[in-house]
Length: 207
Ligand SMILES: Cc1cc2nc3c(=O)[nH]c(=O)nc-3n(C[C@H](O)[C@H](O)[C@H](O)COP(=O)(O)O)c2cc1C
Image (cartoon, rainbow, N blue to C red; front, side):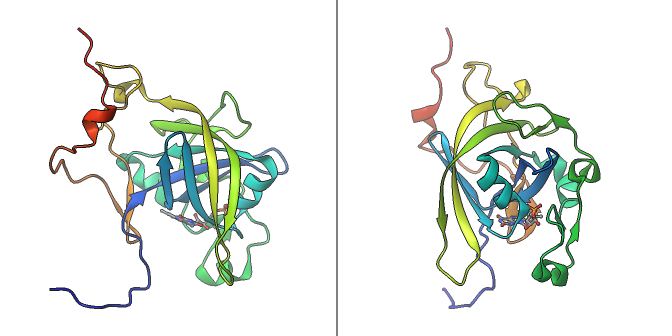
């Protein structure tokens, strides 16, 4: 049985990403977001064009997508309702946002230099993806949202997550992403059933 409803949000559950970018003055900005998906070596990000992150990305054309594991939830939550924009846009003031120039410190996270981009990585995140801007697509007006296509140029993964049978594969049994599900944080609640897609990408075990 189904019922027709009119939900305010349609956030059906996506991984949280901490995007680090460089500000005009060379300092780093860090923003949580969760409208992200990957295909091949690219990622599509859904961001407000009024965020500092979007403005930094447009100017610098590069960023790092840091993926927190579920156990970093309290650090991620400390970044909520903060912006690197000064002054804070009026609509964000009304939502309770405040300007924070030192988001790494505020979140209790540490900066780690990147290899190929100027924005720093988040040392505590087990997955860190250096990326460059490819294209920006605006959502239809009056929306201030944009989808941002980035190309992943460098992948850093905590050694503990790499499959023992293949160096270039992240073990899905060990990776526990932080998921935003209808604005609430979730981890993976356990394995359901084997995916028929997995064998296509899984490495052949070393003999
Ligand atoms: C868990 C979480 C997920 C979020 N997801 C998004 C998102 O997908 N897109 C977006 O534009 N903002 C998202 N936000 C809100 C941004 O973090 C917010 O706009 C913030 O001010 C951006 O920082 P900045 O202005 O310094 O770039 C999310 C916030 C949290 C806490």
